[in-house]
Image 1 (cartoon, rainbow, N blue to C red):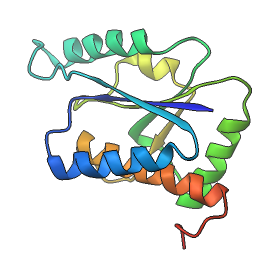
Image 2 (image 1 turned 180 degrees about the vertical axis):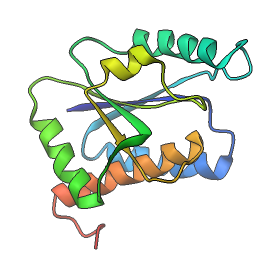
Image 3 (image 1 turned 90 degrees about the vertical axis):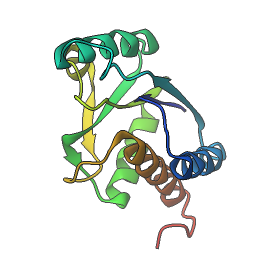
Image 4 (image 1 turned 90 degrees about the horizontal axis):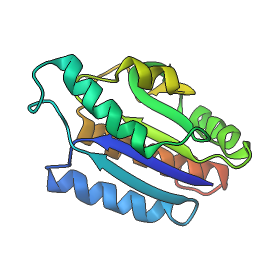
Length: 155
């Protein structure tokens, strides 16, 4: 199974980047994992809608019709770590699909990206900036893989 994480905006904080690199490396033991960063349009567009549309166009270039697309959004379904691991197993049992997780920019997702998504999940009822969301999600993805393998990372 291949997993792609698409994020909007670069990591500017070194401590978050270091954590992300650590979990990305650990994940390679379990799945083929890659990440793509799309520049934020927050300060480059005239409006919130224009920024979301520009980001949507870039996202659409990175996904295919066969991809399983999962958005990370505060309005999505919440899972415990064990529930998320079970959901990941269901995703991985789907034949021949690449999982593409997308963390949106500061304004969220354009409607066409929301419509394309197969599922929307939430890390928490709280809102995190995209840099923290990226690290938290990657840790949870790694945790899910260790749960599925019965390894002791998750207690």
